[in-house]
Image (cartoon, rainbow, N blue to C red; front, top):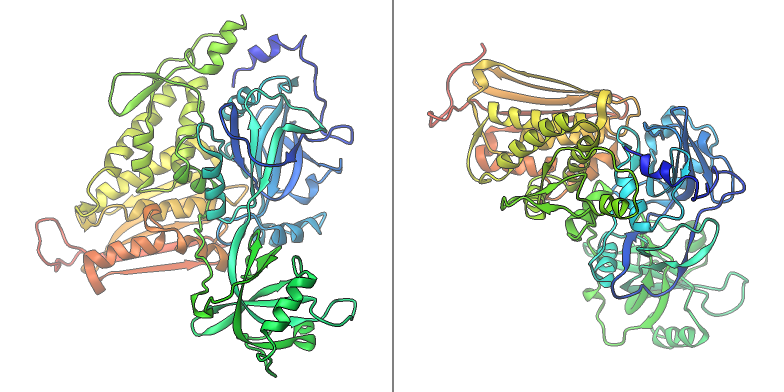
Amino acid sequence: MSTAPLAARGSTVPSVGHPGPGTRPMLASPGDLPRGAGWAFEFVWTGLRCLAQVRDGGLRLVDAEGHDVTAGFPELGVPAAPGLVLDGVVVALDGVGRPSTTRLRRRRRVRAPSRALVEGIPVSFYVFDVLEVDGRSTARLPYRTRRELLAGIDLAGGRVVVPPWFTGVDAEQVVRTARHYGLGGVVAKRLESTYQAGRRSRSWISAVVTRTQDVVVGGWLPPRDGGPGVGSLLLGVPSEGTLRYVGRVSTGVTAGARREVLDAARHLTRPVSPFDGALPAEVEDAAHWLAPRLVGRVEHRHWTGNGLLARPVWRGLRAGTHPATVQAPVLAAPVVATDLALDDLQEVDVPAARASGHPEVVTASGGTSELVRARAAEGLPLGAPPPEVTLPTADVEAALRSRFSAHFVHNALTAIAAYVRIDPGRARELLTEFADFTRYSFRDGDSGTTVAEELRNARRYLTLEQARFGARLQVEVTVAPEVEHVVLPPFVVSPLVENAVRHGIEPKPEGGTVHVTATGVGTDCVVTVSDDGAGMGPEASRAASQVDARHGGISEVTRRLRAAFGSACDLHVESRPGNGTSVRVRVPARHADESEPGRLLVS
């Protein structure tokens, strides 16, 4: 990362100071999201807002109230040069990749968490702004420039996420995407705005994302003060022939709403609960039960991890609506936050690039980006521009996302772009690997491939990930010669390797090793992908299995194998938190020139 231009501005741009009691983050003003040009959009990542100072190879976190909270999050670290001040949010994700306030609250209660707690509820630092580089303030630079600087800082190797930002898209499109993934809100930021520490500014405007949900009223509770009448309504949604409890609502239950419900429920009282399963004791003890006939509508923030409505607001009964028509939504469940941004909002703002004339690539050069042109216009020193390196277009990225998660595509391109500035030769090598990976990913999903080709593509994936993780990711690949030409369906091994990196190595601060082996066992070929990383508990296992087909999760690999080999194949997963994960694939050792397997490879 070159910081000479910032140093040149140092005499005219004052420092915003280091994180501490005297420094507060900039705050967004609530309101309607703006329309028109000149704005960027970010998702709201609910968590603990912090300013982070990087020095002496360590990270110091100070929350918005000025309290040092570094000790509470020992897994966070930024392997970057000292002199950085970053603005971001400490986030704990639930089992499907959404920010969870409940999980984060469990971490915040403990000042010095145990290793078991850290591994059981890992956190990440989501960085969306940079306030100092090399000790020089960037607060007076425009938001667009600060974001470009942030993209150029090497933050790989730690539990640090730089979430994307979007321009050129309609605000409602961003809101729809946030709603689809159960995120809490959207922030609009003026592209030319400076960083106003400690102030709530109209240059940043935040909007809460709410959802509507039809519900069945299964009862009511009296007011908390012991008064007569309805205090809150007990809500449910039909599920497999039963009524599943989804929470209670009191906000919005006005005097008129109470009269409406009581009038409609006059002949619906019943002595037992209509809900399936046990409810909280305070509900069971005080509830007035109703037959599940009344349908109402609530507005809420999101669904919690245990299936309850978060912050519901009653919007009234829906006369004439049958309870059988009520359904809970099926939320998309990205494992990694970057997936949802890149897959659903294609127009991610990146530095401008010059076309190279090739139909599938554009040329990115340090001498032609918006940031460099701006610095040149201001007379700032540029240094020697790095050689041109071709980067994939949006069409190429979209095709890659049809085979692999946007998390990998985004991180691979970010790593290559970083090497363009610091090691152009290495950037060319990585780009070659990426190009080969791209060509392999474009092949027909119905065509066959071989073990050797699958492992070569897995090596390409691991080489690109090693550029990001450095020494934290070690790799061992072993293939027996007799199984190199065994036929496999394409895109079977690399998704398993990706799973090992994302769920095994990435959550573990010290990293680990991914082992890939292919051997012959009798008349079968056995491919094993294992890691000595964090391992997957029940939540991570569910999340990994829920990744949809376009991201090549374990369930999708199983589907491909079954389609090719039927019951003659097997996929077995063994994982325990703290002990790593092993995925073993066993298929008939059929070669391309054989119609049926039968050759004994290992007796």
